[in-house]
Image (cartoon, rainbow, N blue to C red; front, side, top):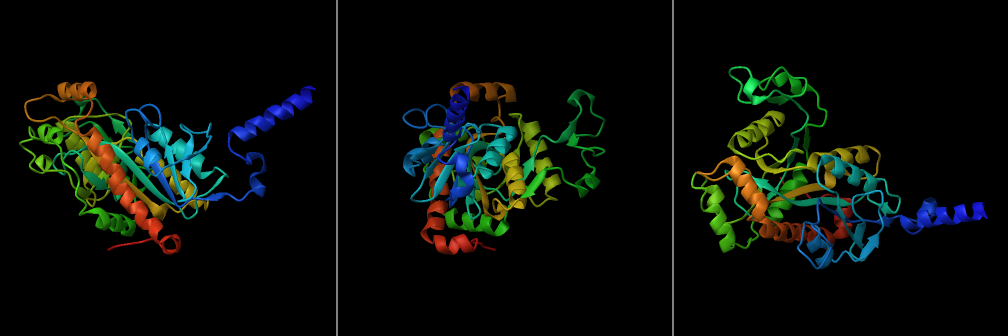
Length: 356
């Protein structure tokens, strides 16, 4: 009796992680064409205040659920179109774990899948305004480092944060090896996605106008939203302010040998791409099919006349002025790329689109 009960329990557990999990070797995995990677959802997947996932869930629609107790959130997919969506959870650790779990899930064939990270972020007002969309070519990690409190830094240092195992902020020799501090996406694919979407009109709104108006020292930040190319800095700490914004610009230039331009600040993308790099080496995914799209829900520094602390707390309390626009534009711009890939899938399955 006890043995029979145990066997029944094991069968139920296998069923909870997807049909046929116990017979993974005998069931063909489901081919996936596009994976949409979002980082958070504010409540339910539908019918309430939307986070990054809800628009994809409702509009694709991602109407088939695959239980995923090994991940932050269940997996959802549109079986007809081949589009799959996940919510990784916030931060590099959650992102890395969720993407690795999906990549090793025997229910799915991800060998030809394109990956679209679509999430909100803070933007440098020197580069773009609220609601804008940035396609990243460089992903730079902001956590692997040494730190000395700013009150104790040596004379001549701009800040006390410098690359791990280096001799200080200006030590270029550290870049001879890489522990995951910087990744470069497939330039041809990034340029293709940017070229496809660069002229898309993004809606403006009086709320966005009012929020960007005080940024009198940043003429680009006062413009309506647009689609640009711009690189991503991922750090677990939600930083804010002019001095840290200067650090972010220096950090991205350091790790990209001056080729990258800091635009967006978020938490996850180096963790996501680190897992995809390992999965690529194992033959599970193609890391050359990865795109990262970030949209501006807020600025990374306050307008003139406000302190960093006051403005950060104000935004946290009142929600970000550009949040709704950032969520909508992430979907609209990302969806155009996905629809284009699917419209000629036989070609895109074989060959990655590219632009110089």
